[in-house]
Image (cartoon, rainbow, N blue to C red; front, side, top):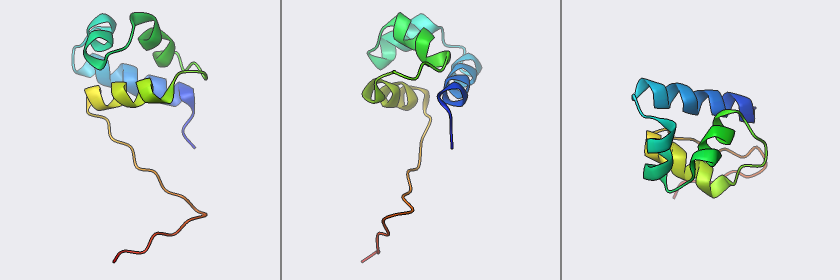
Length: 74
């Protein structure tokens, strides 16, 4: 299971590899600087919609799977 701290580290490392400042990431992802700072620190209460927007902005993709539901291909 991915922790919020691990997600924050991934976002920070990706942002730095792309040579993007926290301020620029906030502007391009439609969030605030404080949100980016807290997200990179692994804050547990970050809003999922904003997190998804930041991930998309950085080109990070996620895959969701459920052990309780199986989807058959048609």
